[in-house]
Amino acid sequence: MNLSVQTPDEWLAALAKPSLETVSQFVLLPDDWLVICAGFEDRALAVLQNAVSGQTSFNILLVRYEPIFQENKLSAIREISRRAGIRVTEAIYNRQEPAGFGSTMLEKLSACRGRIFVDISAMSRLLIVQVLVALGTRSDGFANCFVAYAEASDYPPSQLDAESELAKSDSDASHSILFLSSGVFDVTIVPELSSFAPAGTQTRLISFPSLDAHQLTALRNELQPSRFSFIEGIPPSPRNKWRQQVIFSVNQLDKIPDTERFQTSTLDYRETLDCLLKLYSNHGERERLLVSPTGSKGQTVAVGIFRAQIKDVQIVYPTLWSYLKPDRYTLGIGPFHLLPLAQFSAAPSGYGRDA
Image (cartoon, rainbow, N blue to C red; front, side, top):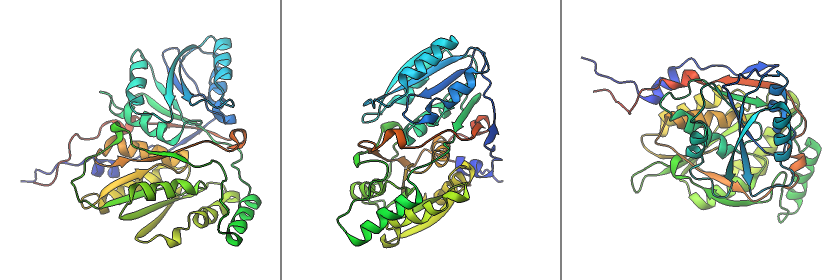
């Protein structure tokens, strides 16, 4: 008799995953909540401004970042909400001490009787994962939960600036390439995203190389992983294809031993989720998997969904010291997207194997 039980990774791999929908209007109702961050990008206000144009009141959970950047849109979000007559509840997120925020968020949302929309547009990558994992642990999981996202219209640096910095580095080994940020504060490991692995188990770092090459350097130095799996991002716009080669060169991926490389869309989370499941299937039983969500927002959504169901992987994150030009981290507002998460709520409990 076949007593096999489908494991969460098998269930997630077989699931018909919902697509990221392009939308023109976010329609929220009086019982709904919008979780929004007071970040510094132009798009930090985009989803809220779009939603309030529907002239229906709803609720806001406003995440206040600490340490505070003067460029953050906290005052603007408060003012937009006041004018629209929207009820605002606030929660502090300390980037340098982020442990436990998921529980804090769920407590703030405990009175929610409607839907929950998580605006990831201005969220840090670690916060996105914490929020999604926390929502996935509720008794009803991701039921009535959505990811809302506004793309930027422009993602600095320009190709000319990036290639100029690379040329300087090639001619002067002491030249530090700093495109967006200035170093790593710490490699953050929060208890709620940790996992247990037996002593002596080899570790594999699954990382998303980015223009902030010091993030990968910090991960390698701090964690000393045995092997590496790099998931490189493919931008949806052909005009940004050059970024792939620059990111490869800045991180010197060809000089890192014991590596395997994959490529997934920076926007379509499904490609990254499938890749993570493949890596888990290939390596999860023999190695301790460390996942660092340093890629795009779309790729990070995949990490959050993956970790919400697959508990025996550990999330590690190189928290940045500061941003060089917060007002130019991204520019403008691009298309809006909505992702329903309810289909990810019915995973089997436990890790059954064929008996």
